[in-house]
Amino acid sequence: MTRAPDSARRSPLNRERVLLAAVALADRIGIEALSMRGLAQELGVVPMALYKHVANKDELLDGMVEVIVGEIVRPEADGDWRAGVRGRILSARAALLRHPWAARAIESRSRPTPAVLGYLDSVIGAFRTGGVSADLTHHAMHALGSRVWGFTQELFPAPPGDAGLDPEPMAAQLQQLAAHFPHLVEIVAARSHDPGSTVGGGCDDQFEFEFALDVLLDGFERLHRRGWTSTH
Image (cartoon, rainbow, N blue to C red):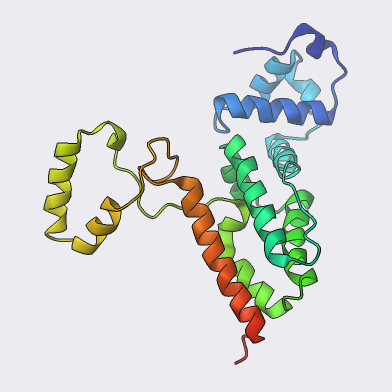
């Protein structure tokens, strides 16, 4: 394990330094492998020194989430609620792509941290200051779901080794499946090619995410213009 430079280890330990080191360590080894002992070793201190700044691993994870959420840009959209919501969500996506473990950490928290609540409040505020009703905003937030954080569950996950398969065997496999599931195969075969995709082999992650986000925002905008309410 790579330890912090001697100059960094000699710096006074504080909560911010502990959290930033934990985020950097999780970026390297993953959230599952992160431990208080390993973090102490990274910082060049004894494990007990950490407990002066975070009471336990749960509090450490809460603080790490706060650091990640702090990276999200909250643009001022001058009443353009759509630009404000879109900008926040795409910034959240960028932050979570920089820290692949963060989505799981956010979902694992039993209670939202103040930073999480502040971010959600800012998304809702973008709707509301743009004139969108509280009623429509409530349902819009439900519709966005985890997309408000910039991630979703992929509908068409890639089969193991998909990127390394030869085109001919893949074509034969799709032809066999098409006899039973023609519409599904048609859609899978039509996907845009992106071998570096992180969700769903062959799909352009960013395009798919922004496409779905824009479809939702278009729908919210139409309902807003109609003066839609959930009561009729």
